[in-house]
Length: 550
Image (cartoon, rainbow, N blue to C red; front, top):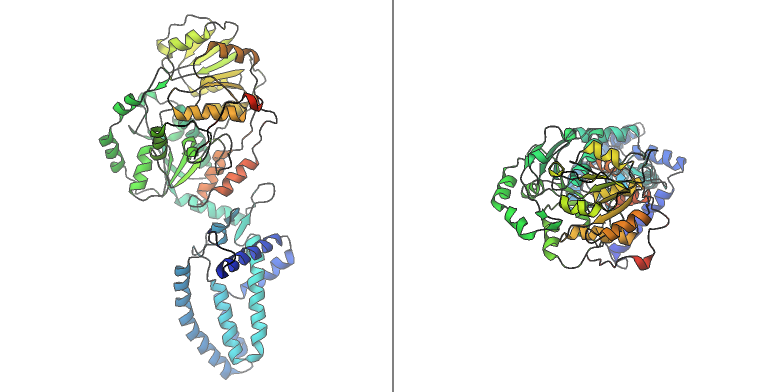
């Protein structure tokens, strides 16, 4: 059942196709309790200790023949067990949970591969040897072996013996044994989580992941890079975290400065940080577009999972043409073995919804309170944009708020802080922000009207603006445009997108040890529980053209 596309017209292709059809037929019989009970009982007779019950029982009828059978079985198993082990390691036929989308292993098997089956091999060896010495038992034992093998597929795989399957409503059925197995894996696993600190969105996502992974009992250490130590705030969820310089982008006056970014790039320092990072205590590396942990994992061959919006650009999502140097940066700044790309929509790719948990909206919403977060624009430019709109109250969060002399009563400046910001966000009537991913995700989930301005020259933010327009869930402006703001304040509407608890789903996926498996099942389950608005903000003719390239 390897995930390999085979030619159905070839012999091996026909066998594989028939095997999958048989497996799926067994899955559809999962409600038949009689098959389940019978299969479980019969398959137990193929457990190793019962093999030698056969000659002991037959010794009551013919002791000499039973002794002969005992000797034959001992010699046969001395040949069969090593041959079985060699074939198992050579053929490497994946188990159904690894080969078929939608199935997940209920327990951790004793070995990785499923063919040949130890139960089947041993059962037919005993049947053949017994039938050779006691011919009258040959046909009944063969029939018992066939029945046990096929009924075991129903009992062992469709119920809770070996595998679990998602129910039609997307929920998973777990027994206490499975939960104990997951908890045991989680206790043994130690994780290093690297987070890019250039934007607050990465840190906001990491806070949600930190809580979810703590709930799963995962032991996680955190490393941040990309900004100075005094610019981090509200870092309590991360415990005794570590800091590195890493890589960062130079953005001035709302525009990405490529030469400034190159001036900040210190390759020798980055290589030194990568080589000096000790990963020996860790079983798994997580990276939210953080280069030090990602490259250290690649250097030391540690499994690495990338979690973040940037990993979505490995798939054909809306994005502007050109900017090939930025595409290379997105691809290689923080490479990972498994990429959990996050986006507002799946775009027919194995993406996940945003990790952006938000509280429920309060009853005291103020339609005239507008939250403004444009950290890459200058305070002077923001003031000039907002001064004409004295009928509204603007809560402006900016890293340089302390340097601003407030001159307009309807504009209030303050430095970014988590609790104050979110308190005003959930009671606001709208958000004006750069086209980053995380804050826009929070606004969509809260159902607050949204106006974004991408950082000039930053292809990721231009792609985000394109996606919001294509989906019809947010308004955009190419520059700080007072006419666009006036129209938005007067006529702009909000839509609400309800995303599931993605952080909790990823944490369970990691705790269950599935970080080396295909993410299609995880992606499909999360999108099934996402709810989009029935009517977008604008009809198709008003949408901006989108260039979708892989």
